Length: 152
Image 1 (cartoon, one colour):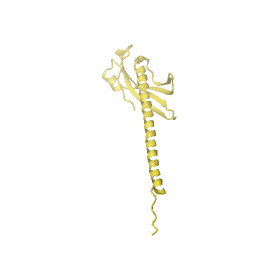
Image 2 (cartoon, rainbow, N blue to C red):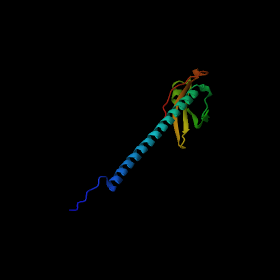
Image 3 (cartoon, rainbow, N blue to C red):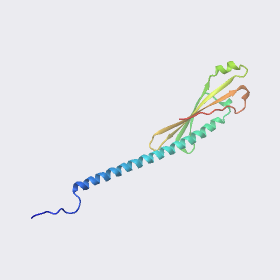
Image 4 (cartoon, one colour):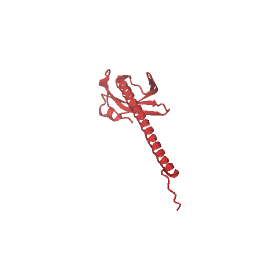
């Protein structure tokens, strides 16, 4: 009787299948890790943008309303070459308010502040906020105004 004994071990097909499963798992884990690192970077950039935006909005809220002029202004942040800001000031017509109280004309300004952040990969993100300033004739010489606005 000539019986062959099967030698202990794995066949080549079993080894190749196991390697394919391990390789797929490793690549999936690396992909997920890379995405997580990207998301952390995006979250940091967004947090930095919001902080800088709040700083700029605060700067413009302190400007006396008599100094407002319609137009666009832009600039950069000191020590942050990858970040720039832009402010757009628009006069808002309020004819209905003048009709209600002709002795005290009012003017309102809409201010939009944007912060542009260029990330290391060259992608630029923009964060913005709007607020309004209302001036009554009685407010001359005061910092007056108010009202906040959201961003996005």
